[in-house]
Length: 459
Image (cartoon, rainbow, N blue to C red; front, side, top):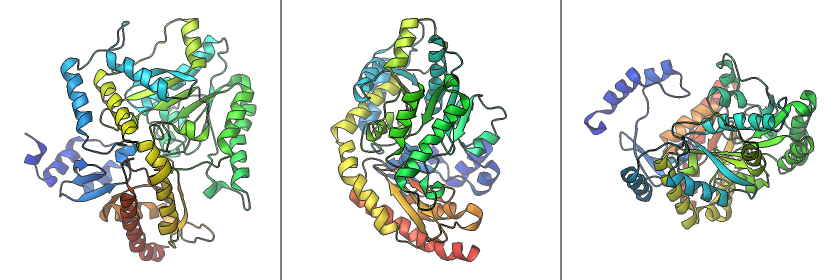
């Protein structure tokens, strides 16, 4: 029996009876019923009523090559027939993770040549935390345990990932966070820049908050700084150009490792294979997942720099860490084909030189002039708009619900976006054309127009 044998109402009832969703108020959801997405093709998703919705979030930051790729389905099928699973424990491996590791080393920055597999970004960040602390212990510096992160950062929803991240709501439900993780201000100039402060100066000030945290703790106690090149789930907060060079200088000065989380930005999102390349960052670890398979299979790859890998190999001793599905052969087969498609179709060059600049300009010119918009920002195919009551003062609407209202209206108009407080964020599939950008702006502008009267009436 397949889902076609059930009505939407029946599926929603079963969902409410048995399915606990992630990041959800379950009481609220079960009152309203979940939106049932039943199929997808190219850049569009379709619900159970047949409604076509332009996907502005690439699933969940991941479906970079779009939906309905028969090559990816065939890669999974062929691998399943030959070898559906074997583990990477007991001195064993299978061919596809080996070949994928070599491909990732080829694509990654020059100092990054090793891969540790998992099934999600959360797992990969757990691995990165353990590996970095283990590295310093092997180097005879076990006191270097503190990791500096940032407020509003998202590094996963496992206990370690949520501890590394900087989201207050997640912290309040940890009931015992991983210790020795410190959070500093993010590079979010829209709300945190001082009056008259230039982007350049703000970027330096935000970076030097990391330096101050190192000095407060003592460099001999600080293992690493972790950061997303662009804070994604925290609101697509794009740092000023001065930020990452200063972070790099600070980490080098105090011998602090640099952990870069590219779960969202990896594999073409910013117009480069990795945003580390976009910003010229020399990382010691790079966390990747999501678009590695375009979401067609769950897979993460922690890319490990030579400094850490050399110590791990040269010093020897077992690293007591791993997952049943580390290097899953089917997921790795899909990843290899996915990377081939991205390269063959020139999607990264398209984002860098065509659709990315067009997307930024369209947001600024067609959305940024609306009376509800305080700022638009974009890099590659990744963007955000700030909802405000007053463009001059950047005053927000009361209650913090403006983003949700505009999100819901946008989806009703056929454009899937995500809200983070009073910010609307977008990260569409890399297959978007200029026509899709125009379609998105039309539907988003209509949502803004529809929302304005109600928002101003409510205050």
